[in-house]
Image (cartoon, rainbow, N blue to C red; front, top):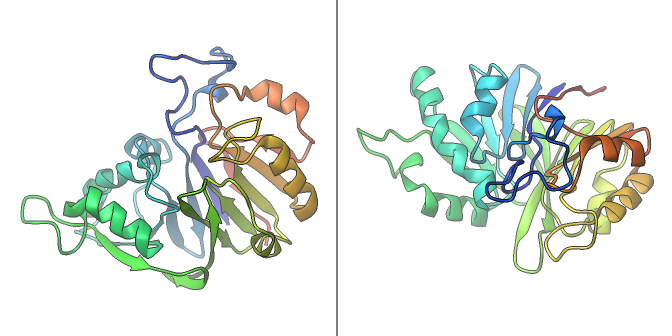
Length: 257
């Protein structure tokens, strides 16, 4: 399995418009971060996880020419607004319809924001490209690939989905990982987990919490994503355990089976 980190920045990317680099060294290109997204290539399938504002550039950077499915963690703008960029890819692939998987709530909210992309919302000038596939937590077949979806809190009012595909797991925006989810994340080779902030935050897990879970779960390698402008790459490399690293845009991971 090959996983490409298309982007590893927070909701505003880095540098932040009007606020700059924060504690991130602008001379280090690994601190320039687009919104968080990942591409999974497994068993001949190409699966996109989340599609924020930077999707077009991310897919161009990764040389993506085909796509089989999309997984959406939740409907915040930095995870869905790049879906419109997929219309061009759909047309280039002969008007291919992309199945998009997520909770019923996430898909309904996404459709209300981008109605023309869905099968019953487009027209001859704006051909649709998305087929909604609502799923509940558990194991589901995604274009022939087994994917475990697990629900997690993203603050008090939002539930997001995390995903496990074989020995790889992607845990986006969350404020906690409940014990039942941690049981699903044991035995991993590679874990990519959202780590926007160092300290406790109402909507996001702190870095110390993530490191505690990492010690419990014991994946072979862990990569931090969704990092804000105070999470400098080299500083994190010095501080973190050797098997825990900050991701960077364009990072390619080979996941062991």
